[in-house]
Length: 130
Length: 128
Image 1: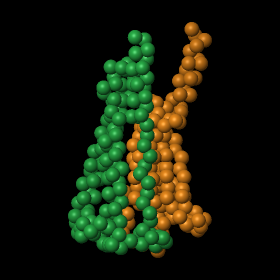
Image 2: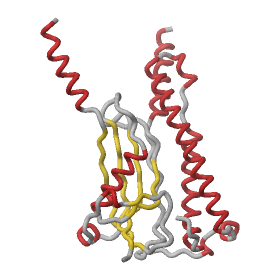
Image 3: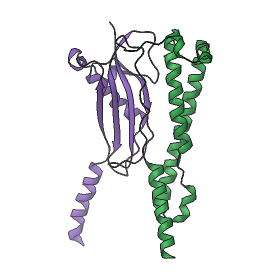
Image 4: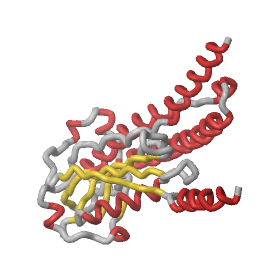
């Protein structure tokens, strides 16, 4: 009985620790736009459907992604507050409310990769939006 | 009981004086001569962009990684504004005019802090 309670408490602590860990900022892409760049891109370096996108569509997709990233950030911060509350309350009863933020963190990595592609595409096409 | 009041007050004062945030940064320099070649720029003059600058030519000085951490569990979590300020200061030291492609990690606990956030960006200087 006692060991079962200890196991639940340990599971809670591990879950909270995993959920509460900070995540590194996504890596920066290769420099393809500075005057001292070592790599130069052309439209051939992009997928055909991306290369065909007009500047307005690129700008719209970037704005939409940034909005969704901000929302995911908000969700992660809210869950962090809930997790901290669960930590203070303690006990195995708090386990169901612990959120790992896995989906949001995965989304943010994918979104950043896409934003980098759109940023490079925007530069290659000479779109004005930075 | 009275003997405990002064040490307790001192401990409280020390704890409160430690409130706030600390930061550290590292720079992967693209141009090895950059830190000495360009005069440093005031942090307030350094622009921060989450995207790239496509309408002005620029020299890439280096990639900057900044970590902002809170000192105690009672401090507020580091936010983007604080991280940007540290990024501006680090890039300004290199003589940068702007930091582009800025991206943030999620705030969470680390080995050294109850709340840590990492931010990365590329320090650039416009071609005059």
